[in-house]
Length: 386
Picture 1: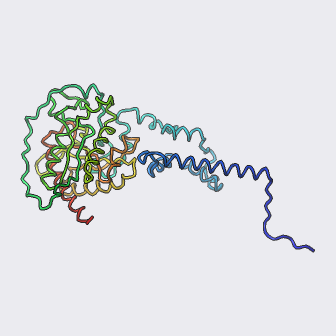
Picture 2: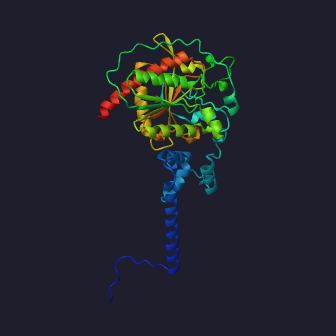
Picture 3: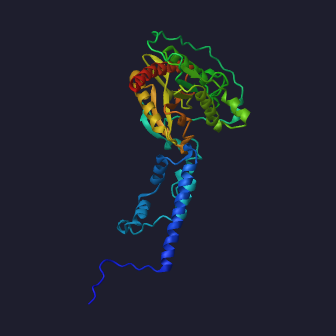
């Protein structure tokens, strides 16, 4: 009597085997194409973990349960009887348009002015900060930017504060670069006859004056700094670009500066918020200051490092000048530029300095405060790195 063969015998028909091989080969080709697609783009356009996170959180729990149920049917059995699996067309439509079927907010959020503000992520909330007081980025048409306006600086009274000569300096090394992607942003108290916040722009009396003050105060404290005062409106006009291309033009300026001087490590892009005075002003020791808001773009690989730097700087600022900082928010591409040139350095931040109703005097006080705290931060950071 012959012994029965032990083990499991699997019989595969020739046609079925060909189908399996063909399917596996096709799947492999698709994987290679997807990998090539994800890795061929410039780093700032590649998929980041935050992108995948946004995709996953856009699905309902039922949809994710159906996906996992492809492997474990018991998971699907736990769902309500009336639930239905998502269709391929609805998933593809959502990925392609970022519009969620059944959620009207995803359609209106990009069309209604100010509606998309509520998608920004508050990382640190300063005093009085919530989703109703987030920075508002003005986007005026080019004809508004090019309009000539009268401005007055007669009321500025801000003599340089007496400070002790710095014990340490960076010598001939410049480590800070201050620039302005929206250089024409100005302040209503200094614009004669202008009341509309969207028209608070001027070719000379604008945020670049605050940047110049910040640069000078850093230098007085031994921190080598370079300030850029490029007229961005003229640059955009020369290139035939709209206001929305400001970050593209300022990126060229920053890259050029960093190429000429590799020591430039800290990048500050100073802006003016469009929020009103009650949200952008604070009184410290009997004097009014223009409050600041820090913005981190998270659509690039350096954003965690930038966030760490900004969070440490904010904490020191809040300790020495309570209430001066309105906090830190993070933005991706759905809420704005998403990068803000911050991929060029891991110590880069966009700073909203005051609002349309703040005076230059208040902004100058804030520029001094920022330089005061940054000089302390810088030497602490140098001590740790050494």
